[in-house]
Structures are given as C-alpha cells and as structure tokens.
Image (cartoon, rainbow over all chains, first blue to last red; front, side, top):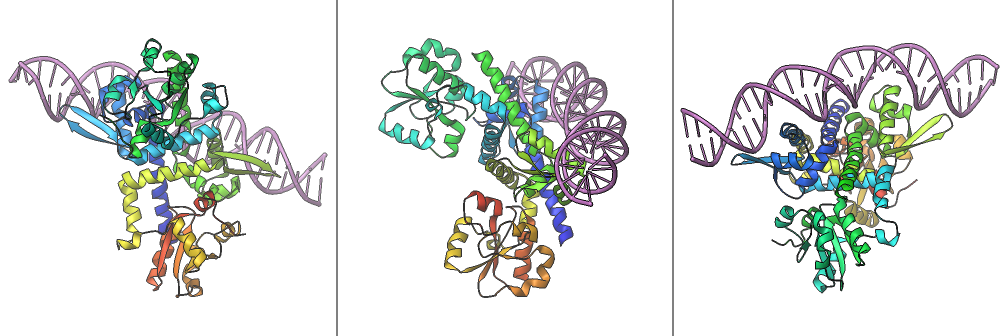
Length: 221
Length: 221
DNA sequence: AATACAATCTATCAATCGCTTGAATGATGG
DNA sequence: CCATCATTCAAGCGATTGATAGATTGTATT
C-alpha cells in the first residue's frame, strides 16, 4: 500500500512536472499567449513569435504531449489551440507568482506607472457594469486580425502602431478602458500611458479578452 | 515604443518561464508539496523526497532564484518556505491542467475509485458547514509531525502506516471526511478506500490543509 | 501526374540540466 | 579553539534540451 502510493505519487509528480516544464520556456509562453486569442496555424505562430517553422512545430508538439494544447487538421493547415480554459488559469497563476516574487517583473510592471492610484486597473465586473450604463469607452489595442475574431461589445480597435495618429477618434467625454491579450500584454499599458499624456482619463482592464471569454461575458462578432 | 515593448515582453516571458521551469521537475514539486505544509530545513526535505542533501539544496536554490520559495536562517538550520500563497495557486493550476488534459493522471485519479458517485469529494465550504453542525468526523492522514503543526478543528490523526491497526478508533455513527496535504496527496484516497472496505461511510476533502489555511478557515493547535 | 505549400521528421551541435563526489563555509556547543 | 553538524560550493559526468538545416510526408491546386 505504501509502496504503491509511492509509485503513484511519483507518476503524479512526473505528469505535473511535464505540464510545468512545457510552460517553462519564453517562446512557448509567447505562443500560448497568442493561442489564448484563438486557433492559429504553425506558420502564423512561428511568424508572430519570431521562430523558424520547424522550431515552432517542435515546441508546439512538446506542449501537445504535455496536454497544454491540442491540434486539428483543416485542409493543409494544422490548427493549434489551448486544450482548455484551465490552461488560462495556469498562465494567470504563473503571472501572479512572478508578479509577487520576481523582482524583475515588479520593476517592469511598476515602471509603466509612476502615480500610485494610476496603477489601479479596472476589474471585469466593474467594466461589465459600466458597459451597460454606457459611461465608458472601451479600447481594444490588439492587432486588427485578432480584433476581427472577437472583441468586447462596442469596443474600438486601435492597434499600437496607429495609436498616435488615431488618438483624436476617441471622445474626451468618457473614461477610456484599454485592454489587450491578457494581464501582461504591454500594449494596454502603453495605450493608457499615451492617452493620459494626451489628457484623457484612461485605465486598463485588469486582464484581457481570453479571460473575459472564459468568464462567459458577451463577446461581439 | 514598439521596440521597447518587444523587449519588455521578452523580459516578462523570460521571467515567467523561470517560474514555470522551476516548478517543472518531479523532485521540486515533491518538495513544494512538503513546503506547503510549513517551513522545513534542507535535511528534512532531502530525506522526505529521497535526495542527497547537496542535490536538494541545489533544487531549493533554483526555486529560490525563481521566487517560488524563500529561505531564512535559524541557528544552524536554513528554513525554506513557500514565498507566497500564490505558489499554492500555481500548484493547483498545474494540477487542474494535468487532471483535465493528461491521460496518465486521469487514469491514476479514476483508478482510486470505481463507483461514479464515490468520486465526489467534499468541498471546503460543505465541510465547514458540517463541522459546525457536528455531523462529520474529520480524519487527518498526514504524518504525526505535520499534524502537530496544525490541523483542522477536531480532526483525528491517523497516519497511513497505522491505518489498519487503528481503524476501530473511528465511530461508525458519522460520515468520515479524510484529508491530507493537498488535492493529489494519495494518502487521503487510500484512507477512504480502506474505510469503505471496512464498512464506513467515507469521502475525502477536495484538497488539503494548505488550501484550507489559505482560505483563512480555522486551524487548530 | 506534377507542382506548391504546410508541417513534421532526422541528424547534428552547443548549451544546459540533474546528479554525484569531495571540499569549503557557517553556526553551535563543549 | 576545536569538533560537529547543516548547508553550500565547485568540478565533472552523462543525459537532455533548443536550435538549425535539409530531407520527407501529407494535402490541395493545376
């Protein structure tokens, strides 16, 4: 009994370690972040993360073996996606540990804001309420392709590159809430900084579209 | 702006990867599981996990660099502990991903139970209610040293090795809820199996003492 | 069938990892 | 101050990982 439980413990620890190890590489995390937006093929992912196709394929397969992603074939493309919402939770959990306990992350995160109150992000719940009362403008700062595949109701899409030029499209009347891919997607941070510099009242959403989706809140398009 | 954000993204992904990688080894997970019970010194951990002291020390230091654990010196001992409750969340998240997406884990978990309804664990909330109404006997199946450092209110401690011999200490009148170190600590599974075989009504708590503590529920001793 | 393209496989190499061994450091108690 | 014990350091090893380049498989298009 004790002997068998030792073996079982070992199996569980080994399996768990596979999962964590599969998430333990910068490039794989970058791909997971993209996959959190929706299905992608190997080529696209390789391009976005800056890897060769062969290399991206290898990483994706290791993540598939660990159960982080699944793949399906459509025509000549192989489409990968996160296997589950629990993978989003895992990414969040990794981020929270890093945020609390890794000096480098704290520095980077706090570097994007100087004022204390300015750091306060808007929670999902608060944004949902304010959406229905219409007291807020929602700004989606992801690339146009990702916006097209789904976004928050009524959101305006301005990718980071066009930010400076298209600032004037946004009304000064309401507070602006910017969001991006997830809690550590820096585009949202940068957008808020730019908006504030231009005299807008702006905050960022605490996390991103994948988490909004996972919470079963309405998505447009 | 885009250039700098690329760099920042890379820093974040690198830091996050360090965290995940630090959790991505069976022995380190085993040590984290023990550390979730409370502070431990290097010798003790090495012994429990079955490593040489030097090796355990190396693993602990890599986890310290990644921010998963912290160390303090007391006399001639170096006491390690989880740096944060967020680390518990991380371990839970890893477990949930593995449970949902790794065939091996599913097999092991379901192997401990054959009947469908038997698999239902008791939630923390349910146990808390039933504790106050006194309709349940709580069984702590961890080693006596860990029990001594804190346990659920009114819990009876019977370590796995003594289970068979001390079964008769438990009353048949109430349902028995067994718990252990965490959701995948197999002692609780085994205890429930043994109790049922002996005609008891028994279930296991969905997770373990660390999670109970993290939820700020009362702990005795 | 012939071609083009997406993705995977294979072989290779440098870098890193996990572990062992033995020596060095730090703290405690006679 | 010396002996002892807990921990860390340092060197060395075999195994694994991450990346590259080139060949191969599988699917759609003509």
